[in-house]
Length: 319
Ligand code: SER
Image (cartoon, rainbow, N blue to C red; front, top):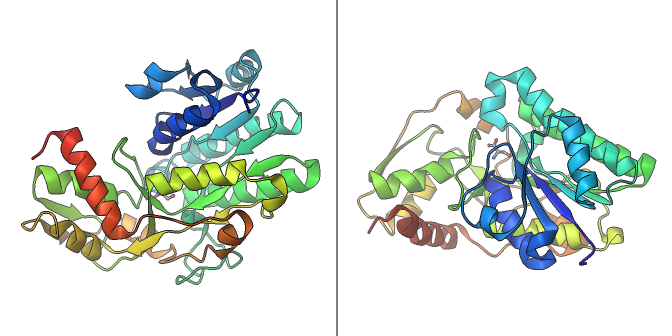
């Protein structure tokens, strides 16, 4: 394990911030390189190496990989669903170009392993929405979703054609307190906690009964590492694994928050993100991940809410 050198691109994002610290715990601080356009604050910067990198600069990316003898890349850079609808070409470029730069290094044998995140956004409006199966209709209708489905298919292609080790998960909406998400359709489920603690009220951009699959970040990080650490022969799928914990709608989340903040109020002003959400699954069948590499979530909605509020009260200094 000690000979592995890991590069996380997009390390200042919602997933990266937490994944860097977990991987440093496993591989040693000096063997896990964080990289991003934005310099991180706090523990990521203080505990190990950081490389300022624009992932669209192919030469700089290759140079970084060679200089630090990187063996694995976690490619977390992406423009998320809501933002990419506003900047389609830029979103496609960012999400796909850097993906190919990394995949080509894998094909050439410069890298040994690549992790690439997919999303529930890879599904679409005619996908069965309840207990969405692993293999089903996939007709994404957002730029972000199209990029995720395309990437999944390329992952499988590279694996089948060049026999390389690439792994992927279809994340549901991810909820976390350490770092804020940006530009996603599921992000109301993070914003709501900040507003509940700071203002006592929240206006949701999704309607009250818009049910979506969600997961608490500690589960998402553990599952990601479990997939990446699983023996290669257990990773039977080289597109993205369905990956689930719980589902809720804004009203149900608000009820759970009210158990801790009784005066909390929510109202609803759906915007363009409503349509995006309506094209995504409401719940996910992740039995293949459970079967192949033993996936099992720990957090329920109520347990997540309790933990979010506990940590955010400290972070925001709210009583
Ligand atoms: N959370 C993401 C988004 O809403 C989906 O992967 O864009």
